[in-house]
Length: 294
Image 1 (cartoon, rainbow, N blue to C red):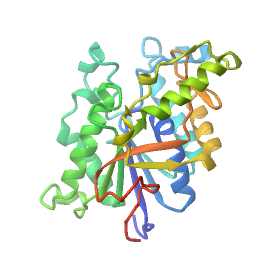
Image 2 (cartoon, rainbow, N blue to C red):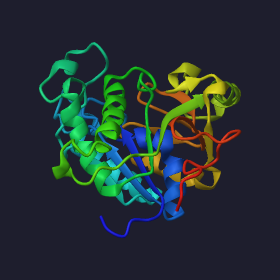
Image 3 (cartoon, rainbow, N blue to C red):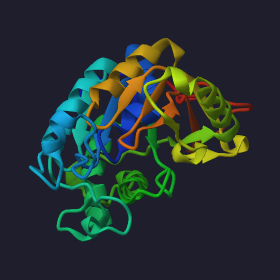
Image 4 (cartoon, one colour):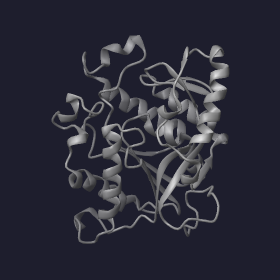
């Protein structure tokens, strides 16, 4: 890739829809500002549950055709966020959704959870050395909520960041590149609790009947852990639209949404992060590129 923009952001996610839920407003904001936003999705989410009854045949226990359908949903979501560069780790179908922790899907051939770490990271190294991001966003070591593919996405992203900077690792993949700033997705507990309190008051006015728990939101942590918040209120409609594009997985009724369990959650348009590599500013940052030279 030549003539790269001065700001370059890479996000690594486990399944289609994770990016829109966690970072949709952030992605739309930086794309609108002219930054290079690159998304790498590690699986096609083939083991996901299907919400619309008319698409139930796509499920893994029926036609097992959910993966390609979700790839199309992902492409539609990225168009709505203005993100032009989205890729599947190692190419479409290289790694399969591993299902929930402890299930037999974890051990199936090709499951992302059982992938060789350095092999999977090598696919990401090639992307890192091509697009040369200054900023990487991914999950914490628990993957936000313990899903095996989220945990593996964290491991692959962090390992790729290490290997990409090593000129001795796979020089055939390009010139070594060090990512200066790495963030993990987070959600401050007080913000989540306040939003859920509002949701409980308004649940009767939504299409949903029950409310999720605060800890159903990935990455909920103490306020003190948060280093960075991105105000994406200007891009709330784009985020909601991107989430709607993932119609097999999400039902949106702004400012709320539900997954296949039909438990309502807040749709957050301010998105929060923990800086784990790079110099931290005094006070809470409002820019993932804080201190990055243009």
